[in-house]
Image (cartoon, rainbow, N blue to C red; front, top):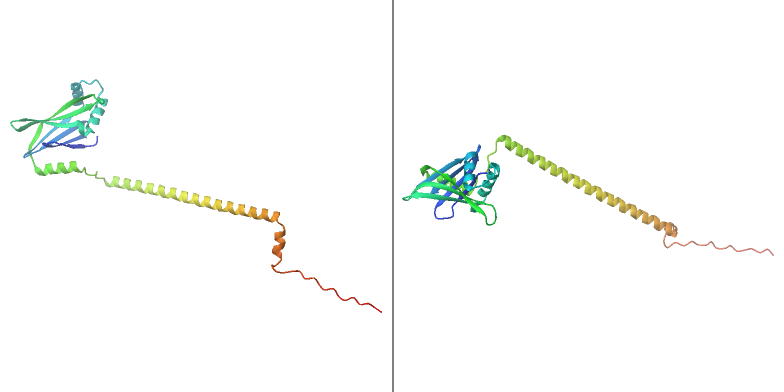
Length: 222
């Protein structure tokens, strides 16, 4: 599960973080007031089974886990309820609404006991900044090298594909030109065959006429 965070929309300002570690889910809530209060709980497989039974669901653990994660993906299905006594926060409850259809849903609760009072403001600010903009994952040198190698392979493949396309286009253009030249040559040959006098005219310079030789005088003997 990808770590998720949620913030309240009401007057009471709280932040909720949901994350997965080993074989359990961890829910952490912090109430922002004059003195910040933090609550947290760990939910393992047994806790999920108990929660499912409280909802009255008869489904296997894997199917219920998928249902729970789907609820966590929707902010409208996530809420935090706060139990106070004489203005003092005593307990937090994570309320999840499970939707089974357009008009069928059930609400389940996870209890988050108080784990810290007077939480330092610097920690509250840090959690607020994490919620506002989740940090990018830090890659190891090996992971960075793998990402760079993958990028180079992709770039080389793209360049090779572009080269093939260019070669194919050039070949196609050359074949088209050759075909056009052959077609033109065929047309010329056909024209010459149909008009043989064109060749004769081409051997005779323009404006030139054959001159007849003059007949000589005939002598008559007396």
